[in-house]
Amino acid sequence: MKRRRWFFVKAASVLLLAAPLAADEKAAPKPPLTMGSVLEASRASDWMPLDQANTLYMQLPGKQVVIRLVPEFAPQHVANIKTLVQEGYFDGLVIVRSQENYVVQWGDPAEEEADRRPMKKGKDALPAEFDQVVSDHLSLIRHPDGDVYADVVGFVNSFPVAMDSDTGRIWLTHCYSMMGAGRAESPDSGSGAELYVVIGHSPRHLDRNVTLAGRVVQGMEILTTLPRGTGGLGFYEDPKQYVPIESIRLGSDLPESEQAHLEILRTDTKTFHDLVESRRNRHESWFADPTGHISLCNVPIPVREKD
Figure 1 (cartoon, rainbow, N blue to C red):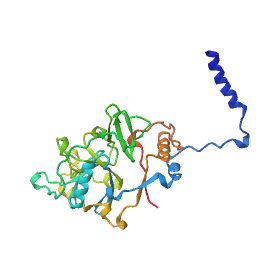
Figure 2: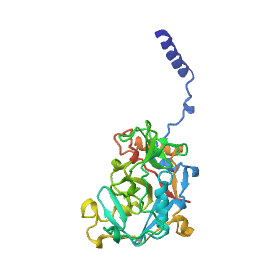
Figure 3: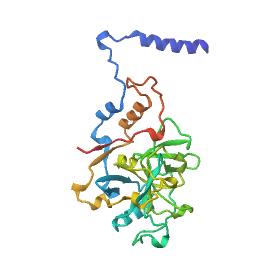
Figure 4: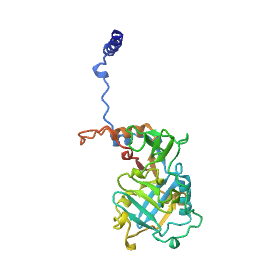
């Protein structure tokens, strides 16, 4: 057996050496991948436009935040958020919280239920949508470097997800820029009337404890630079600190001239695979150690203006 194993290895070596490439036939080494080179080489089919029927435009004084909703994972919350938006529920409400390295939160600042803005058609509480059963319509692109919160992680439709392969449950993850629906003590007390966005290090301990309903695709720099609240958990103590929300609108209710013409890199493409590899193994000259790994929430999902 030893001779036979040695023979095949040796034979393969002989075959490899038997027909060397001529000097002028040798292929030039490919330059190492960088994020810039990957995106520059991307094709139009690697990108998908925003679905305006599932895009929110939050107008703050002189600034706009664009949010992509994810009905695949939170259908009831997304439907309720859209209902609240279309009835003007958020118009004139405020950002009430900006907690360092954590979240920005908005909604009705009234502490007493009786003083809160009434809803017209929106529901004030919904069943939790923390996770769901893996199904064929959720095409998971696995991330190669694993995770400490789940045995499988990856991307579905350009959103970061985690999965428990034993139970077959899958859920969105609390990465930077993800938007969730605040709730009270009961898991079934959230509705989307209070929303927050992750502005700091990924609080993955919130996974499967809060319903995630979307992700900011433009305007994160607006939310991350808001003055921090000085009260407990970063809530603003003085109403003068509140940041007013002029309006929130659904993209499909806006004229085309007021819609953001953005495209998001699809995660089910070779281009995205190459982008992940370029971030796992950093070949820019500054890096002394290319690392060879990247965590799920550190993988960027590029967004660009549509040509």
